[in-house]
Amino acid sequence: MDLIGPARHPMADLQVSEHPWDRLKGETKKAHEAFKLFLDQAGKRSIQGVATLLTCSRANVTRWSTRWCWPERAHAFDLYEDRIEQEALTRERIGMRKRMVKDGVAMQLAASDGLFKLKEQINRKKKPVRLSASDIARLAEVGVKLERCGRGEGDDQYGTFEIRVVVDPPPPDNAEDLAAARAAIETALLQR
Image 1 (cartoon, helix red, strand yellow):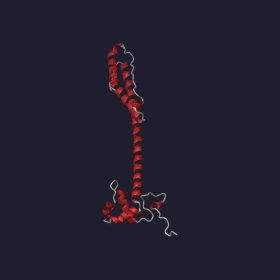
Image 2: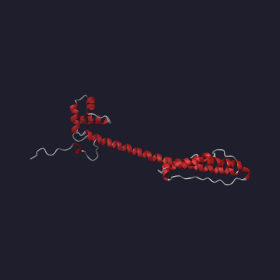
Image 3: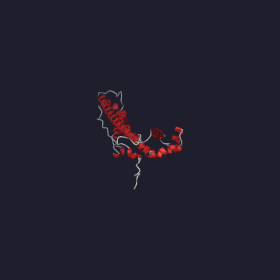
Image 4: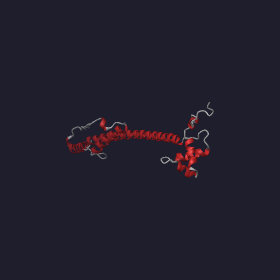
């Protein structure tokens, strides 16, 4: 006849709403404070370190550690902290990708607007003022890459691709401006 009964593990006394690193049922305040010191030594936890901080005997701290399952509780705490950190990193990555997509689209719109203005100025026989054809081509290229990256689509997924820019034949009196724009676009595309 067993009068003592089976030994209960201290972690079995946890209530559902508590964490393993919270004070356990029956754990003294002093033992729990010692455990919190143990937790705070992340990366270099030691019984001796706690004993030194408390000016307490190593044997007493070892007894608390064994009785109240410090290594297991500390491990549970570390896993919890890691999960929180991973979730925060995931949220930051999602935010970064959204910003990249938004910026990539904005760059493409700016390039499109610049190309439209360039074509308009060429048609009106005016020289481009703000964006050169090379600037427009580069902005479009970077914008596409940034949007793809933000959407999780790397260039390797698409292989090699070619961008062709077709410019209508120039009116006879504006051949120099059009030739310069055409050359700038070709140069920008060849530099990729």
